[in-house]
Each structure stands twice: as C-alpha cells, then as structure tokens.
Image (cartoon, rainbow, N blue to C red; front, side, top):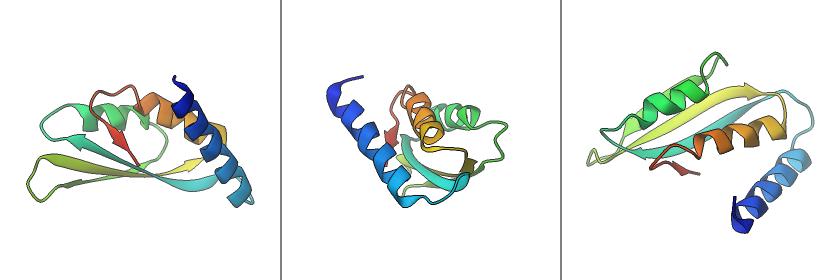
Length: 95
C-alpha cells in the first residue's frame, strides 16, 4: 500500500472514531464498476454472510454499475478491512 493510500485510511479511521458514539453501526459502502464483468459478484462475495443489503444501479449509458451496500459493522477497523478487501477487485472505484 502506498503512502497516499495509508494516509487516506488513517484519516478515515480518525473520522469514523470521531463521529461515532457507539458500535456496531450501519455503514454504507459505495462502489462503481464497469458493466459486463464479474466485479459485482466479487463484491457480493466480500460481504457474503454479513446480512448486507446490496443494491445495484446501471449508469444511463450502461457502461458502469453503481453498487451500494448497507451492512452493520463492528468497528472502524472492520470497515477499513472491507475496503481493503474490495480494493483488490480489478476496475473498482470506491467513494
């Protein structure tokens, strides 16, 4: 992981810790992936068995798919761990 990425996750952890009064909490992940690939299935596997609610929406031109995931997470570290797992999927954009 490069320094810029490490700094991003460090800031995310601080923000989550500073804005969250109690854990666990429901967290919303959002990703964009190219259409026509296996990325949506790969994302679903990362959250399999967690009771996640996963919604997908195709872009207007059908080139991309937006994936929204609502899931109860136990801690800021657990949230970041899932981001890191998903980041290994080719072509994914996190936001």
